[in-house]
Image 1 (cartoon, rainbow, N blue to C red):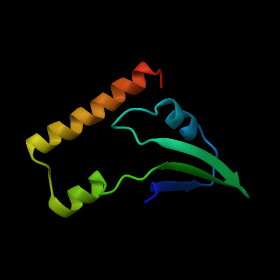
Image 2 (image 1 turned 120 degrees about the vertical axis):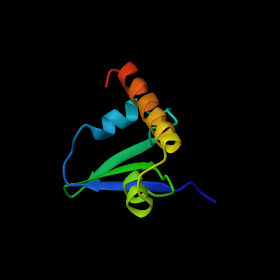
Image 3 (image 1 turned 60 degrees about the horizontal axis):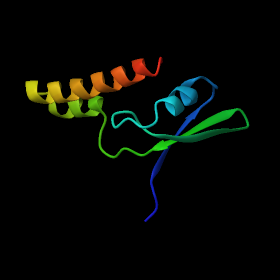
Length: 88
């Protein structure tokens, strides 16, 4: 089977695609595969990440345990350090 992609559609061109392109290669940052525009709409093609968002998880199951929170927070901090090292 082929690779699955997520497509984000927006009505404004911003620096998101440039930022994603510079941050490719980190396990905790979604991979970026390109962008294009058609008739004033902008499309970003990214790696599809299955599952639910943290927001949906919290709404469905309530607060995370201390262990789950630590795991999630560590992943977030690793991504932030990587972005900082790339001067974003």
